[in-house]
Amino acid sequence: MNSCPHAKNIIAYRLGLLNKGERQKFEAHLEQCSACQQEIRLESIIEQELATVSDPGQIEQYVLAAVRLRKCAAPRLSWLYIIRMGVYALAMITCALVFIPWLLEFPLANLFDIKINLNLPAQLYAFLEGFSSPFVILAIGLILIAASSIYSYIALRE
Amino acid sequence: MKAGKHAIIELVKRSQRGDEQAMSELITMLKGLIYTIIFRMVKDPELSKDLTQDTFIRFFLKIQKIKYPEQTRAWICKMARNIVYDYYRKAKKHETVSFEEIPEPKGVSGLEKRHKKMIIQDALARLTERDQMLLTMAYYEGFSLSEVGDVMKIPAKNVKVYLHRARLRLRKELEGHKNELLSTR
Ligand SMILES: [Zn+2]
Image (cartoon, each protein chain N blue to C red):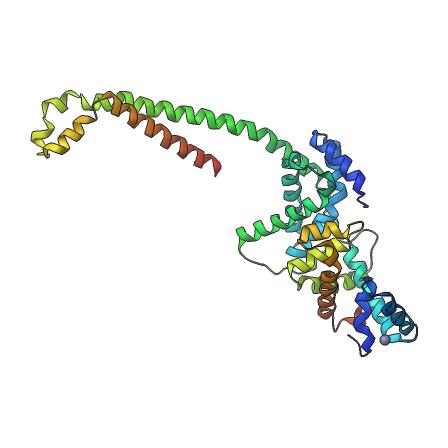
């Protein structure tokens, strides 16, 4: 700042932070102090610059177009989401209801007895055999549907 | 451009009904403020323009959520700040950019004024983002202390005290440029 001890009051004075007594005292001083007058001029130059806003140029058309685009993209995205979910679900149901029983009842599976050829423990064999029950197949299908839904939800959020 | 509060409230209500003319007027009214807030934070004219556009896009996509149109200016200022923070979070780096390309303010010309502007912008750039935003909003025409306090999360009655400190810090940054700023050739 400058050498005048009153200069520290200048910004407070400009902001109207001085009380009545302080303000009157400062104004009386200001009339005779050229250093403080200069400081006031400096502060008003700074204030002028602070109050000056710059112009980014034409952005109206771009913003409106982008908003329009996003607004129509939003419902399309949700349709896409539903279609995609449907496809996944169908694929998984097909898998669960057709492919797994087909695999389990595949003639080769009967021909080469899993128990003998793979030398599996009896418990594990019983466990594998359990998969042929329709209830289990349905459960697997539902799990796969849920997994695919979660996957497509995450994929679409990206 | 003067941004009258009542005009803004009316424009926001029309924009919420999808009136593009009102949206366009709202942008025209507020773009200088938003651009200046962002520019003083990021210091790059092109980037500031992009982020200003992003701010308005986000603003209009969320405009239905405005329950109190009188708080629109404070709302969009906060949004601008968040857009800048998001940008930095993604970029994770601060780049220093020269001030060569500062757009000329309307009605101001001449090297002298341009030079003074650069000195002050340069000093402003060395303050914290919080100070920059506080100073920009506080000196923007027609911003009330309570609006500024709302954005800066300080009680309205303390805004001037914070402003005082920010001004002192700015003045300190300008130490040594006094004669240049005061010179009139
Ligand atoms: Zn003095």
